[in-house]
Image 1 (cartoon, rainbow, N blue to C red):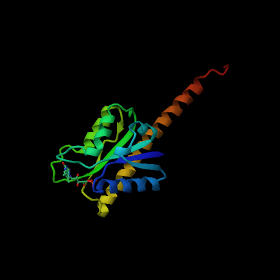
Image 2: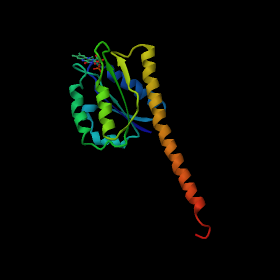
Image 3: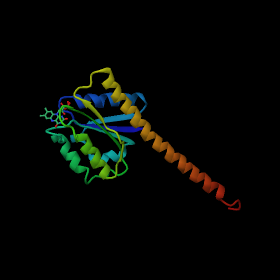
Image 4: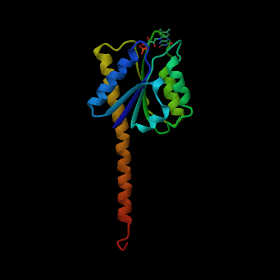
Length: 172
Ligand SMILES: Cc1cc2nc3c(=O)[nH]c(=O)nc-3n(C[C@H](O)[C@H](O)[C@H](O)COP(=O)(O)O)c2cc1C
């Protein structure tokens, strides 16, 4: 399974989450690539079986400056059907009514991406056992979600092919 993790991080908190998710997925046998969002060709997201997008929040619940180009490109790029989950570090002492990752998730959903319903938000730095475990559990759950859907599709497809096979007249 080919996974991409795109992230933006100023002081390293979101990057640390990205690295924990990456290590967890790699240990589960995934081929994982990781890159900053401001170095990403948005159209390449289609090439992956699963995508994680991570960002911190900035300036009273706004997108960080380095994520703006990516956010705008999502309006033109073909991200239809891309399976995506979002995570990031915030400061929960802000109101956090709507964070950068909520904005990114909504934009991808609006453009047809297949988004994982829950986001992973951690206050500042990921240091405690519980915070690390939350990142690992998130990686596991998203991976399970994405493969379940694939297996279900394969099952339906094989069933349809079987039905066609049995319906075929013996004379043909
Ligand atoms: C100037 C400034 C503005 C910030 N604005 C917000 C904000 O509006 N909402 C929020 O949740 N966090 C805000 N934060 C906190 C960062 O999102 C938080 O420190 C995060 O852990 C940084 O992640 P990073 O280390 O990946 O850059 C702000 C931080 C700074 C320095």
